[in-house]
Every structure is written in C-alpha cells, then in structure tokens.
Length: 151
Image 1 (cartoon, rainbow, N blue to C red):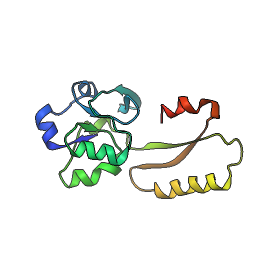
Image 2 (cartoon, helix red, strand yellow):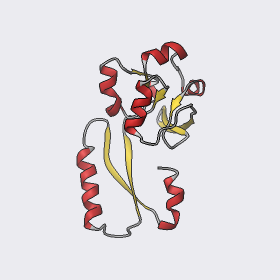
Image 3 (spheres, helix red, strand yellow):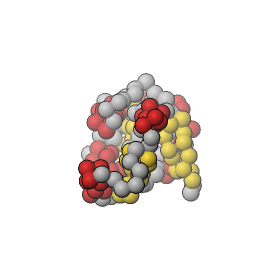
Image 4 (cartoon, rainbow, N blue to C red):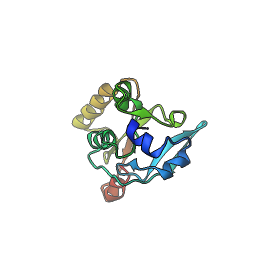
C-alpha cells in the first residue's frame, strides 16, 4: 500500500488497517483488501471515491495523481517508492506474496494452449514480490458471472 507524499500530507498517514476507513482507497473490483494480522490474513473493507477497472496502469495512474492509497504487491510500487513518487504505508500489514489464480472450466488435463498460458505466467512472475505458484481453480461456465465479480 502506498500513496503520494501530497495525499499523505493532506489526509495523514494511516497507522492501523482500521484507519483506512478514513482514507480514499483507490480500488479495483473488490471492496476489501487482504492484510496480514500477525500470522493470519484477513479482509479489511475499504472505500474511496476512485474505482479503477483497468487494474495496474489505472490504479497506478490514480495513485500517482493524489487520488488516494493504492494496494499492490511491492513489485509494482517499488520503483515509485524509490523515486519518491509514492510513500509506503502500513508495511507491517503487507502480504509479501500474493498468489495468482487461473480460473478455467477444464477438468483433467489442460489443453496445450492453456498449459502454455500457465507456463508463461509462471516464467513472467518468477521475480521477487510474486508468488510464482499458479493456482488453478475449475469454474463451471454456469458460475462465471459470480466469479467475474470476485476477480
């Protein structure tokens, strides 16, 4: 999680996850962020005036333009932190490795093109800050609308 120095000067620095309720959180699809609480991970409901559907580029753009606190793995925000454009917040609550889920409806052996996609993701995310384990979740087509709200 991070925000611009100007945003934090205006709104203050959150000290606990509950403080996020008093801040504008730049959100993607989910109304909650998963944070570490000791050895546990728990969802924290967040809100904000900005909701971005283009994910990484859109979230970064919103955060870099003082719209609020953004939630990313360190991999995405580290260059902006190092350059002074963003300031990390609530670091002790960060989840250091976030898993990646590939949702599909194939049971048994994956078709070659899906297997190639999984391999591509494994290779491209084998960098610090990524959990290189790709988890696979079988999603029957009848449930796709429900899952799309979660992804």
